[in-house]
Length: 106
Image (cartoon, rainbow, N blue to C red; front, side, top):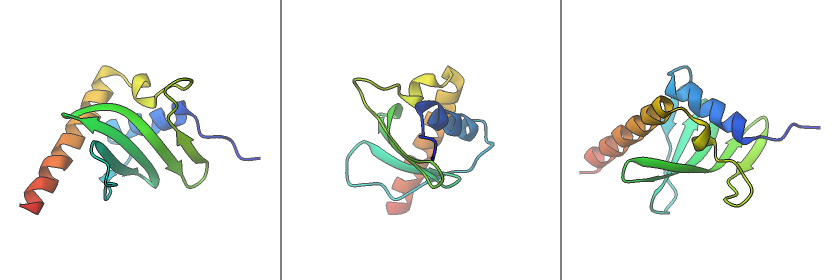
């Protein structure tokens, strides 16, 4: 039986990206405004970002462990488990990626 992917697993992947231990890459985003798709060493995350602030993780797909989906009513959001510094590092990276994307388009 395969173990289920948990919010703590997703948080750990975000934490490792914030620390620079794992590669963090921007992926082509879905058409939804405010959502950014990222890849962290093979794990695909869909993050809600608005005004440079990371609000929460909508979805995570791990090739080995399957999928995790945000449940606002019953679930823990992996973003809430990050330290203030880790969250700031991820937000800084996301803003840099958004800025670079706009420069490349223009």
